[in-house]
Length: 386
Image 1 (cartoon, rainbow, N blue to C red):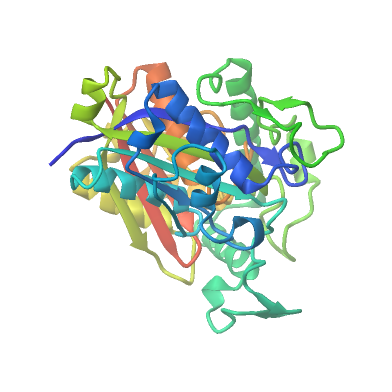
Image 2 (cartoon, rainbow, N blue to C red):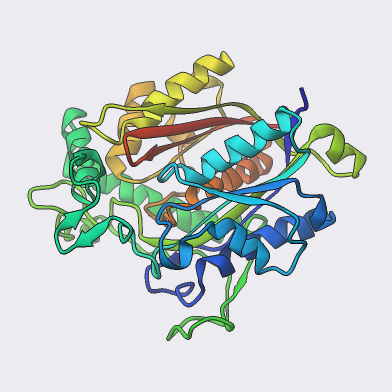
């Protein structure tokens, strides 16, 4: 079997809903990172065997295989094929799983795994509506947005004995860590600036966006003053992932091909997993997926240097931490979806991009990336730096 390795990994900054990146279509965001990983590696675009991208709300501007449309819009060789997958929030992580597996199976020797979501332009759930108050999946309560996800997060919080103060405390930590990461320049190597002048005008947007827009000054008093997201709930806008726009991409190769091209293998997937979780709690996927991937890799949680657990809701991350007694100092050390944002179809790749750069920054070896996903799913991967 060939050994799949990561050669390049980049992401756009993440914009708020209606914010700096909202004037660009999803294809414009996604093609930027597709082109950037090729540019950084210095390879011929036609050498890419396949591209697989993640996108959750595949409707309107994000429909009809947005990954292929993004590639065609680059003007690069049309012979490179592309597919779009939907594993809910884990879509771009699953795209990386699939490209890695295709290389290991000797189907291709170069591939791009990526993801995109423009939640400003294609709001979550628009592909589910049949009319006011009606959803296509109404018979399945775990897929009835947004009630099910908020309800699942609240059930997890109460099961774990988490208080409003506990959740607010984590939201504050996420924002402070993200602000510190930007101040220290941690994201400089992974973020590709986005020129927004060619898109629809967005009042107040800079000409070139080079920072995550969701990071903000936060205080305990400010968080405590925010109303609950649902009646009698514990979560607020300060402890839930931000609705966002963004894209990310990872360039994979077989180790032999990378070395033949004079490129440095940077990381491998030690193992990967996609699992189902209890629909009553809906968002326990990271707990279940972590258990599976650690077992497959014959590792313990203490063996891992960094944990990137998607911050869909504060309770999801704190429940995962409780389940594994994980070291908070290794967990989402540069912030997460609460502070940086969560463009659904891009976040799985964004987490891998950030995990790789964090391992390189700290001379670490292993990172765990795990996500909760709609439909009661969980994704997890163990990234091992070469």
